[in-house]
Amino acid sequence: MRRLTAALCALTLLSTGAQAQTIKDFLAVAMKKWTAPFEPFQLIDNIYYVGTDGIAVYVIKTSQGLILMDTAMPQSTGMIKDNIAKLGFKVADIKLILNTHAHLDHTGGFAEIKKETGAQLVAGERDKPLLEGGYYPGDEKNEDLAFPAVKVDRAVKEGDKVTLGDTTLTAHATPGHSPGCTSWEMNVKDGKEDREMLFFCSGTVALNTAMKIDVLLGPHPEVYGMQAKRAEMKDGAPNPFVKPGELVTYATGLSEDFDKQLAKQTAALEKK
Image (cartoon, one colour):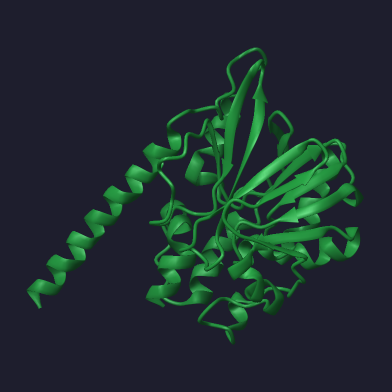
């Protein structure tokens, strides 16, 4: 249970305040936010948010079709497809599906969407067996953490590039949250400015604090303040999602929190 809480639930526990004693308890609390609807919107340039209130899913518009970045729980797949349609896009135009990490809350709709569209699935090479087996690593027989198995068409490693039309993303291996946890970097336009954007996989020890990123996005909205930034968006005003240095600030905060928790647990052990 400690391994699960650290690897799968840490970020969400911060936002839900859940004190899960079992996997079922955790999911019962988390699912309320994970499956709650959120109105889709254009985030920046050719990047659109089509996820739920608690799980981030993105569509990237290219000159040769759409790229889908992650999905949500299996029961939210219909909502994700509706959100794509609300933006005027066609689910059938999805040509590539990219994954940040192979956990059920980000992979649940892959099998259905892949079957419907014929899109190619791309994921970190060490997450390939997880996706094709539909299981959580180290807890393969736990049905509460299982998701529909799906074939991976291309497995990527550090520095590999994925291109569709006029858009190229670079894969960065950031293992920790899952064995093949992959963060995806790409360029976007912010008015006349060129910006570096990162779909980061998860805030683990492996998070690369040296990367110079202008726009930080992630698999859960709360970790980059999506809702607050969305509320700040106004015509003619600077895009609030453009925040150079946010990756370093976020990573520093994680490091400080880790040190505090380590000191607290060490002190508790010394008292025994």
